[in-house]
Image (cartoon, rainbow, N blue to C red; front, side, top):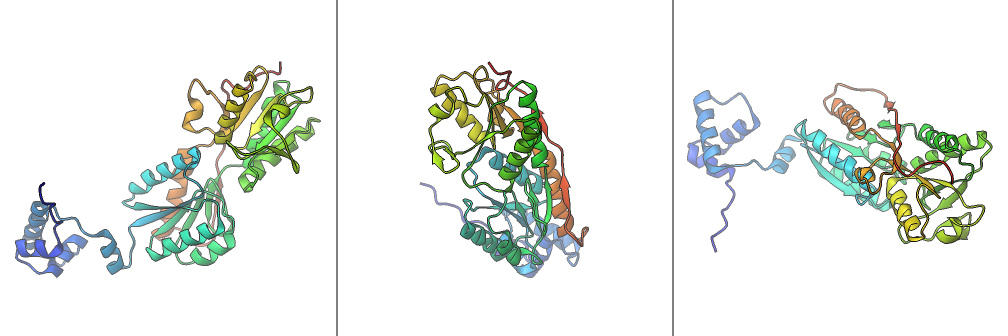
Length: 340
């Protein structure tokens, strides 16, 4: 076995270039106090040795971080994972690295994530989920480092999101326009504000058309669906004369699981049951799935959100926080049609 090569240090570069370590540090930092011939000699030594500065040590010395924190609820959710990847790519354009923290939707997870970001002196935080205890996180972050919510919102931080109620209304109008009168909304048992707003927009629009949707709580894939306080099963919910002919599911993750449930029960989609999701994750576009869904403009949300954060970091934006909403679009595919 070959011996593993030790990474080059600041002292190695100084020894090869015949200068002090402080001179090498000045060159690495881009300080203009080093004479051009000396700078060229140091740069040649850096290239020859393959020296890479210790980013964490540099930011501790300078007091300026070179990373952005990303706080998410659950990276197993395809939409959140796709958004996190876009944020990572976008902040890299500004020369920043990223640090991830998943909270699992737990208040203590949110607190740990915020403390971790402060400990590592990051430049700013992107939050891709609603918080369980936003006041606690505000008390830690507000005034210390800039924060932005993307696809979520809080009044104490810059936010860029969509109109969730308007999106729910679009779904109801689409299904009622197809002729459906027996509707249902499926959301998680522990809803966040996005789930609630989507439901409210859907229900209020249906109510105006004289339709009262059934409300079902479900945590896929193994959770038991409940209606009110009563447990149920999908076979009974999706069978019988009063069964819903169309279902709006709070996110694509659960909508795809419901497609699997319908398939297992022999319920044709969209012949016997129309299904609409939310988010337009990549897998929803596969021909075998072809999910009708509300498309969140992910790249625009991320682009605007990261720009807001960078403006705060660089002092170009000061004062009160702002809320920006971007429009959504209903993506019509193969899981909705007229009732049978």
